[in-house]
Length: 127
Image 1 (cartoon, one colour):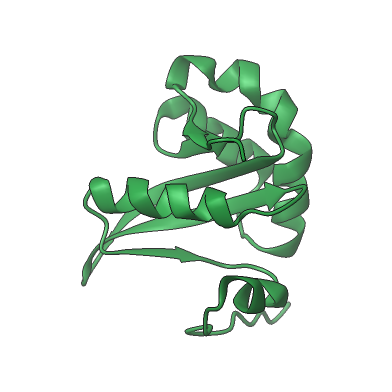
Image 2 (cartoon, helix red, strand yellow):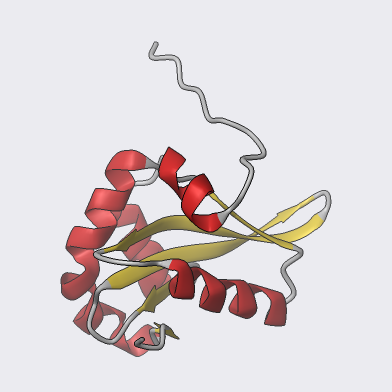
């Protein structure tokens, strides 16, 4: 199993093309952000890019302050195989950096695979 790591800010541009397909696919299923917004956030240091060395998994996350404290939100995550170890690493990072919880949107199958009960469902009405 390859260790997930946080990509240093100065390496984001070099790594980005290798994980772009995974992140684009993830955005098609869950997120209100565009791929350019994710990239701009990572380049600017507002978002964090996590990857496996072989680029088989990637995630972009960011801190959000709310009434209950700081939350670490996974904005997009994609993987060609299992992403459970990716999630575990991100949970550890979030906890070590003061987050009270990790939140994310995802496909229905994630609940089963991660043994989680969804807290809410996202609905959208086109206008």
